[in-house]
Image (cartoon, helix red, strand yellow):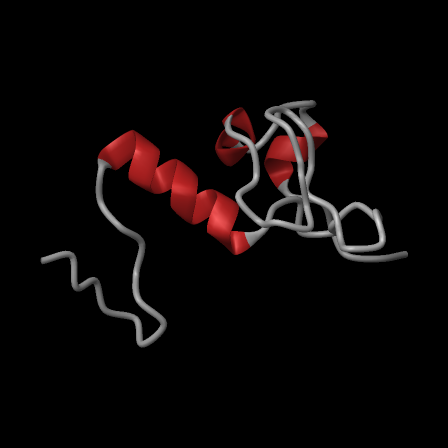
Length: 74
C-alpha cells in the first residue's frame, strides 16, 4: 500500500518549504508544488532535503546542519 502519508498532507495542507521554489537543478518545482525526480515523477517524500534547508535559511537566516551533523555557521 505504500508509505503512510505525513499528517499535514491528510488535512490538505502543504509542507512549509513548498512556499519557495526547489533549488535542485533537475527538479524545477515551483512554489506550492511537490518536488519531482529527474524523470518527472513526484517524490514520495514531497520535498528534496535542500528545499527544506533553503526554506529554513530564508525563514531563520541560519544555515542548515552540515553533513556531519554540526552547524558551523561562522
